[in-house]
Image (cartoon, rainbow, N blue to C red; front, top):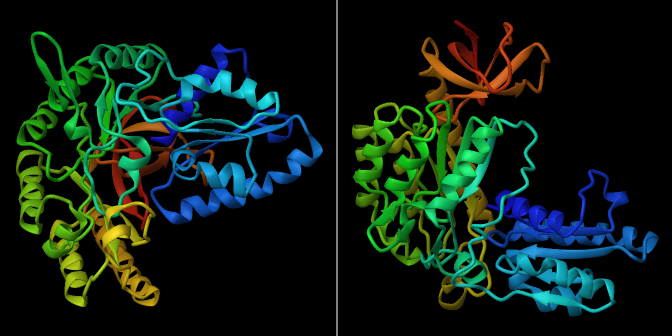
Length: 427
């Protein structure tokens, strides 16, 4: 989401006469796009801002701004207490950047962190910042209505609002015309995408199908699905179209129904398992990844074991796993005690990661001997004579170039694997 937002910001500034630079020492304006979902992300930003202090000492005309989620949440500390920045701009105020920059250049503290119920930046053509020219992102909605107890997103990004589908299709067509061969549709909860006009209601399955039909050579991904909302209609849409990637990121967060209720996730362990079973039934061979939080408030050893057992049952191909850290302003921070000692959180996370490493290795070993269509994204990091790309299931494959080029589709037979990568040959 932050990449997509940064591309919108660059577009707005470019239209106002700004140019970007790859050398921070040449910059007259530095904007740091931030995330508040986890504390360690915020701590990295504080460290980065303090490192930038020496740049301001060398260049008194330099202006530094914080944009995004952290701006909305910590505006007073950023401007008044720490005094590290000149501008604080929330995620719904990017159109005001040229005016706010002018205020900062006059020596004023420039602030706009107001949230909007309408802003989607649908009319802005993002300036693509990706380097490979093969894959990119398209934001289809902003905000979130799911008030998960641990999550700060609804407070810093506001309520859900979906983008006009015509603007999405226009952006996708521009990407295809520019040579892109893969895109990811982005939303905090893509399943709840909904656009109404006089004659119809367009939900996410309908939007996804419209995008897939633009060009059979265009691969389509999406993130993220919410387990309470993912429908059979969406699964059948994915199954119908070869160019909709067979990978679904379906965050579980916990395998314990008791903990899920405390988290306000609005589904049970049994509901989640039924949705995974539906994916396996309707889309054979579909990869499933997840998010897991360990050490949430009141979590017992039994709750932790239920999370581990769900991971084994679901046989996840990949997982993002984190220790719970309390975010100020959330329901969990207001109503629950963060009562699991850090050493127990760490021990549970270590056990969870070790288990997922085994599951990921097993998933890759099962691919050895199979043939996959791979979209080439570029040269392998370890060898200029090898290429790298991903399967529809979002697994990285490395193989000798054999004359193939970036942006092409090739069939690769998997010969062996490492813990992170499939290794094969073009056939």
